[in-house]
Image (cartoon, rainbow, N blue to C red; front, top):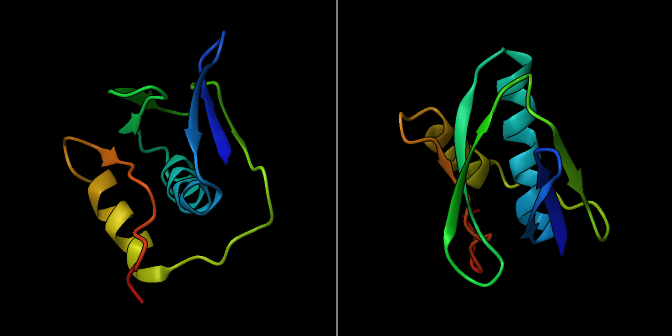
Length: 99
């Protein structure tokens, strides 16, 4: 289980490594283009939090295990959601994820 740390002091979001690898690709691509966006994540213990990601954000991604291959179809789904006014909603990697 990986972690996404946001802010200072950081709020910690537990995210499985496979999902976090996909989220990392989206975040880096958006920030490379100087595109700010919202990300909604599940909180440990229940509920949701929405964070604002920009080049000024204090953000760290921690992976617990090995690197996972990127599923192009699911990555495109996350990118499409990140490009909406509501922002990217991060959910666990689909158990029977798209091919």
